[in-house]
Length: 220
Image (cartoon, rainbow, N blue to C red; front, side):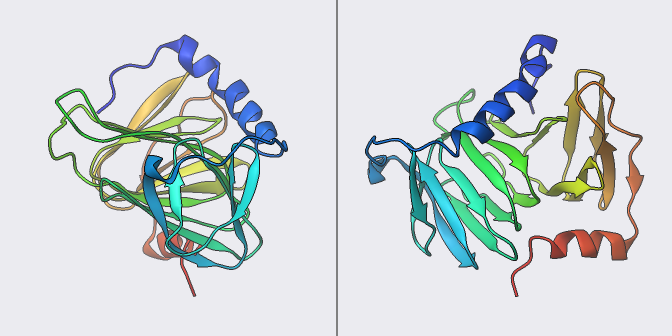
């Protein structure tokens, strides 16, 4: 699990995500990344989804390689399912923008990382348990909070004007400039208004509410 994150790092997160969202729309002329740099693959696509890599927009297709710093965008009614090289799987809902910020394979105690920047939209992350690196970093970074976990099944997405985080299985830390909470029970969730407002007191979501949330990333 991640150690304490400095206020300075968190304070810059909102600005970084704004920059990410802007960069995703820029055109460039650089070449696509080498396929040998793959950190995973597109397992399934429903509807319209694109991968923006080095400024080039690629239509997402089943079996397509995913690399570090890829920007993943989904259209209305679309879904995207990714499988990472460490066994983790990520489902992305409609109207989403997500960046594969970093991925490092496990090679020792302090190695290994899966870091995602969620700019907008809903996701479900089933993160594999570390095999050789107990200090592996697994993070979902948003403008409102950083979600850190290991070997967990979680959902995160917008609820009204707030960020919601829901645990299906495992344990999750949700923290920002103002505070942090631990979610360590099935259907335990929290809401976060902004990075300067502490995550709200966790509560167990009703089964129907949790089911409706998971439908935002479910395939037809």
